Image (cartoon, rainbow, N blue to C red; front, side, top):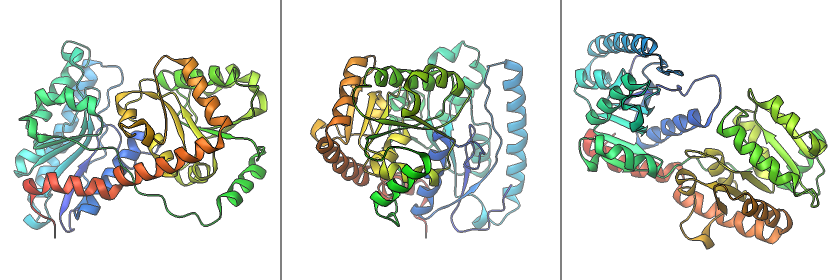
Length: 390
């Protein structure tokens, strides 16, 4: 628990995964982006707790144990904050990502006790849980939404689902997914590519196709298999498939991909800085995004001007222009493998198309999905609740 001896402090909490969680993920990355966004607004986020309220299997006993632990921590926080001078107390409470598997047992209680605004970013409601295994957590999520002074969603589909449970429709806001603009590379792209080709034994003169995702059972593995089937039927054209990610299903995927031999390069788990050179030098990103909520790796690729071919889900579509001629990639409706294969073939064989999409990807993402654009919007919504930071 940190002392809030800073200017315009904000109590920041992520019940699913704290920004400091040791295993990297898209969810954690979004939490970090919100942290940066709040800083850019003029507030100072301070991590209120690292309590993980995640209940994987929905056992009622486990949910109630976490609820008791959360209430105990909330009471401890309240006592701590009330001992501080008012200027050092949280200006507001900010919770990132809550849903029936990871409710917020801290924020509503602390906010009410301190009489400060309660803000939620990224909530989702699954109504089938009203009588399901997570019904205890589900009711807590609905109570948090009803108390929230502002609810911010990066996914338009989630926004529609949560509106009926909020105080009023005007507390709900859609914020396009965002991230910081990439920094300029120290070396020319051709030099970086040459170095990577030598280091990893990748033919430099063939198109490099990139996928960045955990290799875990479920939707991620389904996306990898979808793409694997696509590439198995495109062996008559040159390409090299670069996979960044690891997980429980990695060995299974490697067995299934055995027929493609040295065309696949399994790079394993990388930190963000290690992924950057590949975003700078690959020719396209391919990811079917089966049941993908957002797909921050897709947005990051566009930030670097990497053309993308992906599957159409509401969250993924929100990363692209509604006008097809302005999109930095190809969006293929789910369950259309032949169309997806044709799109991959087009991108592999048409360098001019890739160049055109690259320019559109950078232009659109930098204009509509930057950290600065998000901070401006967030400040506009939250300032009436909280006041303008110094």
